[in-house]
Length: 216
Image 1 (cartoon, rainbow, N blue to C red):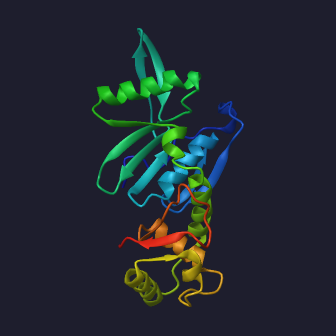
Image 2: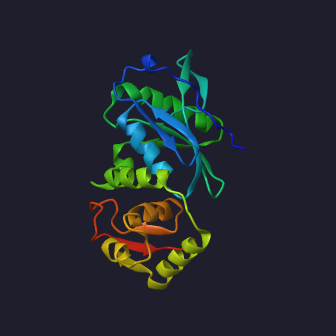
Image 3: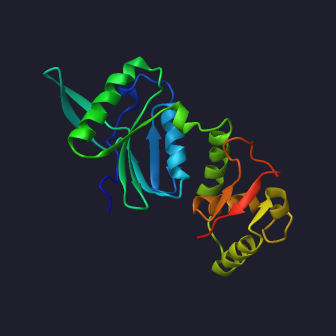
């Protein structure tokens, strides 16, 4: 049971943005919908971060007083990390002046209530030229993947633990994976936090990318 398990429903007509994203989240086990490209990219980083246990988009609406006037605010995301930490997030482009007031009000409310707050923007979401593209590919593969055999899963993890690191193409040709399923299996291991892809932020996902075993 989490503090927030379902978002506050927002009809598409309630937002002026033309970019609307909806997808199934393996992590929170339901459809997630957001109203901008940047919000989608932020959710994608949470979905594929093994240190994130749970998240909820548009989790909570409240009011704050600004210059004696009551203002409504809706938080963009609430995040629960595996170490128990909880963080409220506001998502906006740094140059979007119309969002600065919203971010300031969200931060003020969190400070007043002793809660952690993070401003997520294009700089700390897009940490490299290829990160979002790579995460999109991996998330799509991991979303559709399920382990067929616990024994086979343990054997593959054992193989990766023994070799520690290898290129994606070497693993694809290692004979340990079913034909055409290596990337999907590796995407699942990345989702579970068992492997990492070296330079995933700065290199396009390819056979030359190095896969690094980091343990369970």
